[in-house]
Amino acid sequence: MRTFARLTIANLRSFVRDRAALFWTIAFPVTFMLLFGAIFSGGDTRYKVGWVDLDQTPASEALVADPSVDAVLDPVLFAAEDEAVAAMKAGEVRAVLVLPRGFGAAVAGTAGGTLAIRLYTDPSSAQTSATITGIVANLVGAFNQAASGKPPVLRLQAESVQRQAITAISYFVPSILAMALMQLGLFAAIPIVEQRQNLILKRISATPVRRRTFIASNVVTRLLVALVQAAVILGLARVVFGVTLLGSPLVFLGFVVLGALAFIALGYVVASFAPTEDAASQMVSILQFPLMFLSGIFFPLEAMPGFLQGVAAFMPLTYLGDALRQVMVGGTPFVPLGVDVLVLGGWLLASFAVSARFFRWQ
Image 1: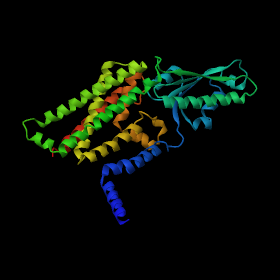
Image 2: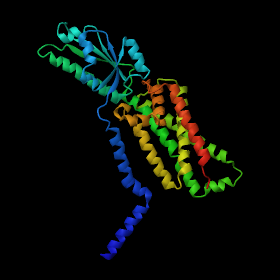
Image 3: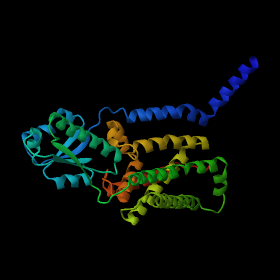
Image 4: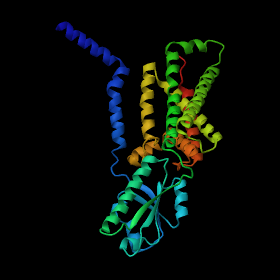
């Protein structure tokens, strides 16, 4: 029994000393739980929706001020349908609801037939679009239920801001590519730290090979892998699912290069401060999961609490995913493409400056 106890204690000590095992067993699931808890603990979410009242009757004006509407939608009033749709394409609102002429007469039961309520959504933001459509469908259903015993007075007419018919998988390809570029760049830290830990960098610094040549070679290698990665993802998406690139191939290529460089530079920041390979692996893991789940590439930003939306607005993956989504599928923007370029360029320059200042060769 004494031998069993000693072996058990020795095994526990060995496990606790293995920081990687300790992280993946305890710290990682706890971090994951706290992360998802923060994402989905924002309470009731209100979606900013362009509101076009073409009826201008007491019934239509009362609807926009209805507490049940205000609880789930944040109406932004527009005078014209085209103006509201243009604002949606600019990323100012997430959907557009149009109350046509005759709304008041329809809900009062004095109009013949069924009146169509138009709702514009963006399929590239699938979760947000589905949620808003469900909310508006419930409103339409409530009016039809109030007219019990009579034919439905309203019906929902769904419209898309997309000009082309695009399959559902098309909207996930930009997010998957953005995630792949992020991981490729961050994981550049691990082999660099391994080479420093094994004194390979020290030996290289003693050779005629210039340090900047060595670094440039590593960066270009990662960049070439990123380009191959993008080509494989797009190629498979096209062959298997029929996904096509709607935007400019040159603009798309530019964002792939800029995004890859920004995250490679961020990977070198990790390599600058990680003392060991295990530490670098843990630092990369801690970075990549908040980046994936708080950047809006898989979960709508509106579903997050306000403080997390502020965090997302600081993350480089938010802007890479937004840029790729705009170029690849014509999605409504989080910010204009020029802002995406500035933010990603800022992260690239800042990360380069930090790694140049703190990177150690031994």
